[in-house]
Image (cartoon, rainbow, N blue to C red):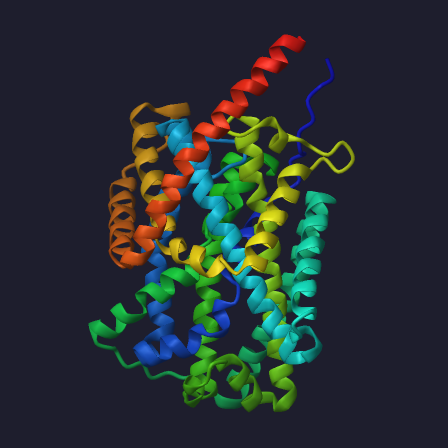
Length: 434
């Protein structure tokens, strides 16, 4: 019998950190400074750094599980192992639906930035064709190899961060460094907390591709913390520079573009628009690299038909899973249903965090692969903060998101039985053939 093909472990610590960084930094950074300044004023950079602390506790708690797994799947794999195949399938279903809806929505954002620079992309025919071309390009790039797609991600990250760093440095040079900080009311901090939670979402992105990561039990955990620290510092740096350049830009819909115009003139707006295009594109490519690995892992472990576990003999990538994911994103984007599905993202993420924390408790109690032995006294502080953070975020979820998530879970339950039936029939046919 021929040896089963498997994707190589081509993702290093730096590449995993890059995936987490791009999972967090997308389109939001271009609107966040004005919103935070409107809520907490000059305290915004400090608020970002303070909010990163409970977020880091949640990240540590979720990604502690990555230290005892070396397969792809992330939270889906952790829940499947701790709580069973049914809940594992539901988590995978939510991850794929939520991420595909997010990709579809972000392609609309990406096209709006492109159309602002090149109006031809905003036409009724050009827009859907360009969207399909972008989806196809990212799909093919990811099929062509993990190293190739991660290489593309490095290029996108360079082009998105360089203009922002340049804006900040020149902004400080021209306007000086602001030193006065006014402490806001508690209500102001509460009003922007959910914005910051959204800004930091995506910190576990690299866990989905652990099966293609070098030394994943160490790399994933460390890369999550490295990515979170880097993003917190970067957000605070941009926010600080925005305040230095001129908070009067807070009234605009594109605060960083307004800040760039004040510093560089008209071409500054073009510079930030280009940065926005690459920022959203890099965030999109990150999703195409990581989320299909959830489908691949589920197929490899028998939660989905073996079709999804196929590996390209030429490129050694989970090609069928990647292409399927691209088709789903394209279908959602063209149908316009991403707006409805996006509502569930808020609640779905809290479901995932809650189940991940429960899984941590279950596997810790069993001392799964030495998990309890590697958990020191500091976790008596980390876990309660993570639980409190998840509980608080859950209470911020609107009723509409709860209802849509419940409906998606109902659909997921039906699909679970359909998928299980298909897997059993496939296994029966394979047994007869052998």
